[in-house]
Image (tube, rainbow, N blue to C red):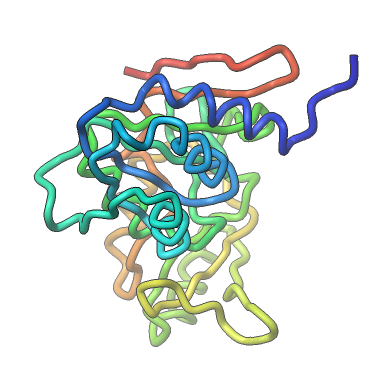
Length: 227
């Protein structure tokens, strides 16, 4: 029997996440390639979904294409469940997110949710966060100062470019990606970087960590509970 491709693993874990959707309630939906598979999977139960709060313009478009109503985050008091992917996740449910540049809105929607369900493949599981370059959404005027602060911590950062120009997020800001970090205390690191002037959002999700991670591998989908 041939191994599953990464694309097939994403499909399997997306299907597994459907069990966490609460019929009749507004659902929080993240961003990225694995979440795209989850949105596609929602087509089979869209009659049970009264609406969704989306973390990116791309996810909003995909949800609306299925006929699912997208609700503004300001119009809900809370969400039962938020489903999103991760670039890395450690043994406590802390994550690095932002490879798709939607980290700020992802963190906002995660903060509204009682339960964060992370969907990922086994390659995203790490002992210590930092192998994946850390995305940070920044106000452009503060970019060089923020890069110097990361350099003082041993990190090498650069502005994320698209076709030679700085990527502009859905919020009109830039992203810096920082290599060479080893984040042994994600909660303290997140709190520290949040205090730097010009940082809109750091891509460490420790305050809004995952409660559950569905991790797809060749052996199946493993459920990790972090409380």
